[in-house]
Image 1 (tube, rainbow, N blue to C red):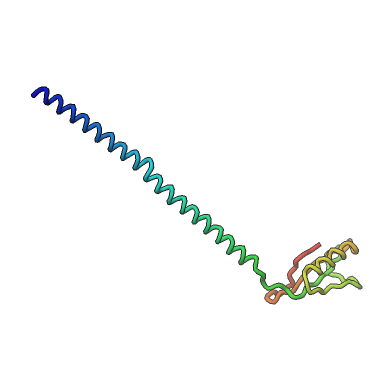
Image 2 (tube, rainbow, N blue to C red; image 1 turned 90 degrees about the vertical axis):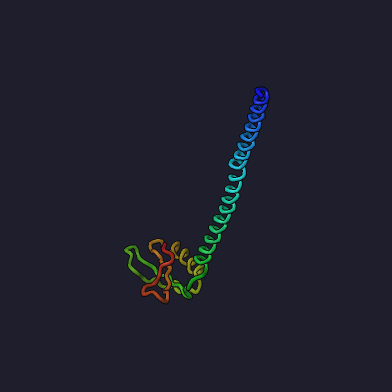
Length: 136
């Protein structure tokens, strides 16, 4: 019986060691690969959605800001003398239909009349004062 106990103890140790090794292997796989894999996949997908949502929010904000608002239909050029007071220069055109043409004429006037400053203005419907778009 003494010999049988030694064999039985040997088998108990082997089964115990195999159970501990298989359980620890299961725990290593569970916490080393399975759970981190699930968490990383979740955060990868969540990160993609956050980036995609940010792109859409930025694009929507840009579209709201970039859409044409109430653009004026007429532009005026107002000359100012060296003291900053409104003045009148005979022979120059001051009323325009487009911003680009008015800006072009204003640059030409600045070269022709260097002692004057010029403001490109327009009257907006909801404003009491004219709005200055450019000033040189």
